[in-house]
Every structure is written in structure tokens, then in C-alpha cells.
Length: 352
Image (tube, rainbow, N blue to C red; front, side, top):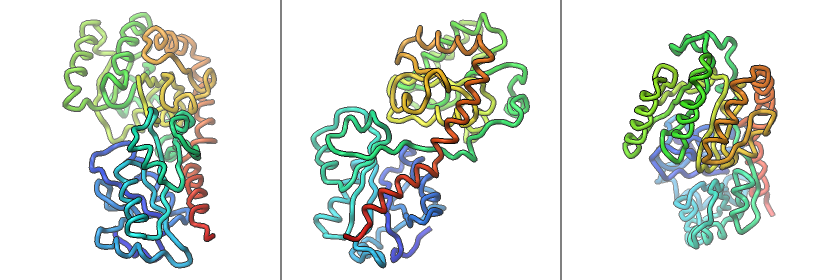
């Protein structure tokens, strides 16, 4: 959808065609931002046609600020989006203010540090990300769509609809199948725990890209050798992943590294407590001992112990399920995220 720029106050560039967490963030946020009156358009490839977008031939129009403003906001989320913003503002002298959202949790290269230093404002997606920035930033945690991710009215029927045994309880691990995501830790924990717990089964949902197919095949062979192939299921990638969350009783996020990680929020919004590694923003999303548990990254023993404490305690499971739903509903809606970002825009757009 193309539109006139005369009223647009914020440009959200997107310069990668490959689907990523940044892509999902833009797709989710922009419609809500506009519904809140923030006047945002996207710019670049790889996004649905349903989003408002600016075309390349409209770039010269950026020399003219929107009515009633002295400049627009250019909201970058990658290096390749910061650099064009700097060129447009500092070389072509377009009236732009630049903001960058950082999700990285590692030391930045000199090049990235320089790009970030040229931004007018910086947003960090969590406190751990902010700790790697050598400048002031505003921490705004991601939110999720609470209409899409919500509890099942009837968990037995939710399982039946997916071809699962409605009488079993299920523990799940969703996301790309690869070593970084810790899928092997989940599989090994299930092989260790399920034989003595016949009422539980496990689901791995997600895709292995070409580079990681061998890793996935090795895990499937491990499951087959354990005799648990009927109870540890690889179900592949699904667009209706929200329905799979509703079938779960417990979720595991075993990542060895993560920039932010939305899966714990999606699970908790479905009234499913979460066992998660101490990576990414997980410690800022999960209330340890109330909505789930934080365990040691990369430790099979730590994961197994944490998971077992829920498999063997139905009262704890149900109590933490209710607490997880309440926690996410009160603190992690995408509307809350959009309003917090909108407050940053408002400060940048204020005429001084």
C-alpha cells in the first residue's frame, strides 16, 4: 500500500528480504502504531503489501517535512538501515531525526559503535542489551498480540484439533531446530524424563534450514533409539503456532544464545509456564518461581531438574499457568510497546 508522505511522521526502513525477528516486529507494530495515531510508513522490501509503504521514487519528498513539523523520524533496526538514515540526514541534509532499536547482546564493532553514535536516540529491547551500548538508551521490552496468543477454552479439544492425544499432557519447544536454539538439550531432557512419566509427551515445532537438517536428523535418530518416537514428536513449522501453544501444559526455551526471544511471552500468554535458559531477555520476561523458572544455560542437568519440578507437581503447574497469563496480560501487550515507542517519537518530533 503506497501513500502520500505529507502527513507521515515516521519511516520504518526494512532493508532485508529474509524473514527475521526484525521483520516480525515491524509487521506486528506498524498497524498498531498507526491505529494509535503515530503516522508510520515502512520503506523497503520483504514486507506484506498490506502495510503502508513508501516507494523509492518518493525519497526526494523527504526534503519537505510533514505539515506542522520540522522533521520526520527515521526508525532503524539494523546497521544497513542506520547508514542510509545518516546519509539522508547529514549528506543530503533532509530534515530527519534518527532512532535505532538495538537487540544485540555482544560487544559492538567499531563500525557499529560509530553508526550508533550518530543516532539521535537509541532504544534497547532489554536491560542486558542496554548494558552493551556505550551511550544512553531507553529500554522498551517487546510485546505480543494478546488476541492471537491466548489460552485454550478447552485444552482437550485444542489437542484433538491438532491430532494429539487429549488425555496426555504436553511439554513443548518451539523455534528453529539448531544447536544455538538448544533443541538437543530439550530432546535429551525428554529422553531422560519421559520414560518414568507416562502421562507426558513432548512436541518440537519449528523448521531446520538446509544447514541444520543433519542436526535435526541426528536428534530424530536419538529419539527413535530411545523408544520414545511416539511421545517426542517433531511436527515441523506451522503458521498456526498459536494453536500449538494452546495444546501445551509447559514450555521450554533452551537457547544457548538469544537476542530477545518472544516464545516465552507467547507461551505465557497462552497460560503456559516457561522453563528458560538465562539468556537474552528471558530473565526480564519470566518471574522466576512464579510464572516459570530460569535455569543454567547449556546445562542438561539444570534443565532436567527444572522441567521435572513441573511434570511432578500439577498444583504448581496450574498455579504458575494462571500467574503467567496474568503477568503477560498486564505487562507485555504489543499496544504497551507501541505506546512506549510513540512516546520516544513524540519527544523527537517536538518542535524546539
